[in-house]
Image (tube, rainbow over all chains, first blue to last red; front, side, top):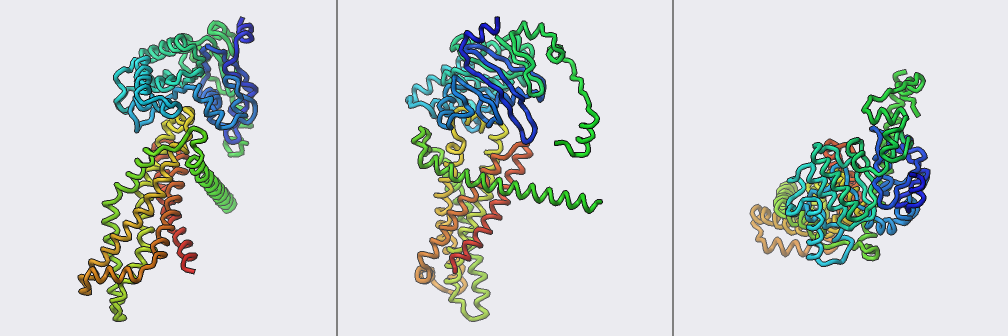
Length: 271
Length: 268
């Protein structure tokens, strides 16, 4: 069923054979995945699984060693920086800590993409900014500075900035990190509402299981830089893969120690 | 055995430092080229450099520094007069102090002191700001919004520095000459009018432009060093502190070395 959907639906994001390195360490190892238009794909995995790295490469923040990443049909490993800038007008990103510009008010933060990329007059920009702030339940907060907001409000303001250009692709890095369960659930609802309203393709990187099961259409499970599984919520839940089950049941990882490698590590000879 | 380890550690450290130096030099040159690219051709990519951030930087780098520049320049002018008169008295040539003050202020002291002051005051602020933005992922946020961090952050600061540093240096020239004049007139009984006439007589346009050229070079050094250090912050708040300190120390070091090289070529 999933394969059928995949071939029928058009791919908004297609990652093919992606290999990336940090220094000499390989972080992502031949990653292949596809996110269909209008779909919410959750990328999950334990710490150090490479999920945040995968997101950063999808955002075009680093140059891959090999492989391709196609966003809306454009291979971002090959296009010029100008084409990438144009493509970015169709992308919105909500970073883990919000990444609001601290020297600007919430309203200025939300309106920044409009100021930079459109020739709309100031009044229209202000109205559009306030509209997006009310979408995330922050109406009337536009004159506050980011430092005056709570953690949940910062994330919602960052989301308002991410959707201000009505992007086709929306990325979230750990949306529920640092939030209480109620605020996290509210943010999940917001993500679902935005998808419904804008038919945006959404990629969420998280390790929060509750949130994953609430919002995901499909889930990509990463482990040690490799894809363990891509499937629907049910498929992932019913998987008999040991690593996936330990992730779902929050079991501690069993670390296998290779005597030779451990010795090399201790003597500083590790490649 | 221990010797071998010490030698290996030393060689590794030297190699790493050299590599980092070369890397930073390359990065600085790329940053310099890119900041001028955005200034000249940004409009072609619909990312023209905007005036308000340039004015904001000019306010911070230049206008807000005026009180401290006035105090420093006046004190330096007086100090040169005190030293000059005391030294020249031994030769009975106190009246030559005007020449000494005029040349050393315009060619050397004003650009150097202003360079050091701005490196400490604005260079540190820039490095800290960029470092904080880096760890809060604000730089990444700029990039994913499709705004070049170089166009948005570096170019306005570079332009503001290139305008304000020579302006402050010229202002410091005038204040330092006044400081020297006040002390000279008190000590030698020379009128301020006579001091001013004599200063204009001995000063050539090249003496002033020499100082201004130096300040342009210092402006580039301060901006590049601050941004290279700010952008390279990775390790939280401690990293921001280290980058700020490093940027001030390196800026001042490079300014003094550049000053020496500049002076050598301009006096030969």
